[in-house]
Amino acid sequence: MHVDGNQKNAGIAMLFPGRSKISTPVPQWQDICLMLQYKSSPSDDPISQIRSSGQVEEGCFIQLFQAAQNMLAANRSLFVFVIGLYGSMAKIFRFDHSAVVASPSFSYLARPNMLREFLWRFVNPAAGGTVVGSDPSITIPTSDDLQWATSILRDRELPVEVLGSSRWYTVEPPTRGVTPRQFLAFRPIDVHTALFSRATMVWEVLGRGEESGQTYVLKDAWRAVWSNVETGFYERIRRSLATGEELFGIADMICGTDLGGLEISRAMRDPATPSVKLEASEVDLRNATEKSSRHTRAAKRRHAERPSVMNANAPCHRTISSFGNLGRHPKDDRTHMRLVFRPLGRPLEDFKDTKELAQVLRDAIIGHRQVYKAGILHRDVSIDNIMIANGQPYKGFITDFDMSAFCTGIERGGKTVSFESP
Image (cartoon, rainbow, N blue to C red; front, top):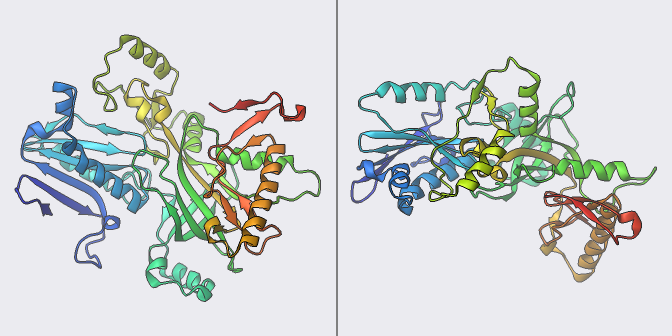
C-alpha cells in the first residue's frame, strides 16, 4: 500500500493469485493484477465531475490511466480493472486499448457484497487465464521449457532474467482443424506501451519443438478495425509470385491471425454462446461536452449496424469502445493481431559501412517493387521498416504492412490507381 504525503490519496496493489512471494522489496507491475486507488472525497470521482460540469480535473484521471497502462503493458493483458474508492463510494473502471468504461457508483460500506462478488469473479475467469482480462493464449513456460530454450540458445549467453520473463504465445490459424503453433518470446525487440494505441510489441521467438536454433519475429498489436488486415497483404504477395519465383527483399510471414476476428466469428457461428447485451453509456468520456443531436442520431444509426451482443465468456481480443458510446467512436475499436515472420533482421541504423547500406536499400527497393506488382502500396517506408538481413540471398528487406493498401490500375502503368483503404 502507498500513501502520498498529504494522506488524502492511497493505492493498494493486488498481486496475482498464488504469487504471495515476490523477488523484489517493492512489487513490480508484472506482479500486480489489480489496483485500488483511494481518494478522500466523493467529489474526486472523475465521472461525477463530467456529469456535473462537463469537465474533469486532470489529476483525477492520471493515476487511473497510469495504473492501467502499466498493468496492460507489463502483464500483456487484454484489458485491466482499476477500482476507484472516493470517500465511501466505489467505482470500477475497465481499460482496454481503445477506451475506458466505468461502472455506476455504489457504497462499498452499505453494499460490501458487490466488491466481494467482483473480486471472486475476477480471480475465477470463465475464459481461462489467471484473472479476468488476462490473455489465455499467453502462458508461462515451465522449468523444462526454460532448460530447453537455454540449450538451444547456449551460444547467445543470454542473461538469466531474459529467459525468466519469457512467455509462450499461441498463434491460432483462421482455418478450422489446423493445429495452433506456439512460440517462446524471450527477447523484446520493440515495445510500445501507450494506452489507447496499437500497443505493438515485437519479440524474438523460438518455435516450440524446433531444435535448429532458428529464431523468428513475433508481432503482437491491436489493429484499428477500419484498417486492412495485415495478414492479407502477405498472403496476396505470396499468391502473386510466378512459378519458381521466390520472395526477395520482403519479410516472409510464417503464420498469423486476427484473434478478435476469430472471436467474433465463433460467437456468430454458435447461437448457444452465452452473451451479454451492451447498453449505450450516458457519458462519453472522449468528449463530455458533445451536444450535437445530429451527431447523436448519426451515431445511433452506426451503432445499430454493429453487433449488440458480445460473447460473455470470450477473452475479449476485441475492444468495446463503440458498444458503450452509442457508436460515436466506431473507428476507435481495435482487434488483436498476432503474426510471426522471418528473417530476424538488424536495424537499418546498424549498417557496418556505406557499401552495406547501399546494398540493403537496393534490395529493399527490389522487394518494394515485388510488393507493388502484387497490387499493394506499402505507404510507410521508413528507417524502422527497412531491415538488414543476415544469411539471406538479399541484404535488406521491407517489413510491417499494417499501414498498407491494396490498389488497382497498376496494369495500366499506374496512371489510374484506386486504393482499397479507408
